[in-house]
Image 1 (cartoon, rainbow, N blue to C red):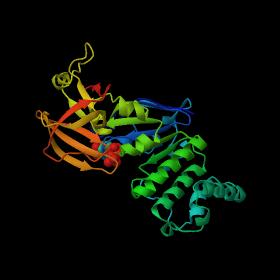
Image 2: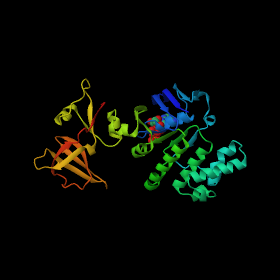
Image 3: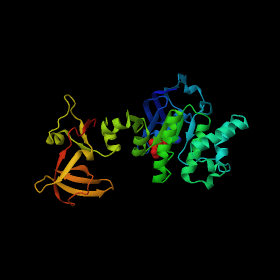
Image 4: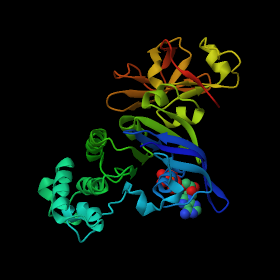
Length: 330
Ligand code: ATP
């Protein structure tokens, strides 16, 4: 089933939290809502869940108008950031809760719970209470619980953000594989670009209640449409037209007023006693070093995979990889 959102607007009093949102989520598609704090990601997820009203636009699921269906009757699976398990119930009871509410036969519930415990690899933890589980295990129970009722849509609100980096990375790929195997259309909210780029089929980049760009992770990274996206997803140096011209790069015809966005990995930096740049700072990031260069009054970001053979203050020259950079809307 496909979710289609058209022209959706949402107000809190006079404040417009969502501005004419157009979005579709296809069958089996994993969509990430990505953007900074306060841009409206959670609001959009809550509107889809039916937990918030909206003032304009429409939302259809498989041709049915969601406005006429209450939150409970939508049958969506929802997982929130904080572990929202029932504290007095075991992992197995938490997972089976939705089926029990639906008055399914006990044998069916037990079989389904077992299947889901295996899916999230928690067979041995069936009888533990939430406080006896780690954060990552609790979130896996929460996901299994959301999946128990075979939801038409899975909604995840920053489900990994309270976990440490290792557990988070592991769960990212687990969730992604599980979603692909089950084929449930999924919307996940995140402010973590790495999470969005690694998990999503489609990234929805949001800023101030608006969608800035929708695209595959590769699209969003290599062809950001706006200054906001170029800046928020990965790092970019944004050059004015005049500056870009200094590198022999001219805007496409009829598109003046744009900015040239340059990824650090596309900037080659070389020690050069006669170079016009000065190394401003070097940040060691493990697999790469990020180098900030003072370039005629502007800061340009570069990256090198080796330890750079120069120190802060050193004169350098820079050149661009062929095909580097894109023009973006200011
Ligand atoms: P975060 O990553 O911090 O959770 P977000 O992108 O999910 O941010 P939302 O929670 O959707 O952002 O909030 C969007 C905007 O709407 C914010 O400016 C917020 O202050 C405002 N807002 C959210 N809920 C309410 C509410 N119940 N009443 C009034 N304003 C609200």
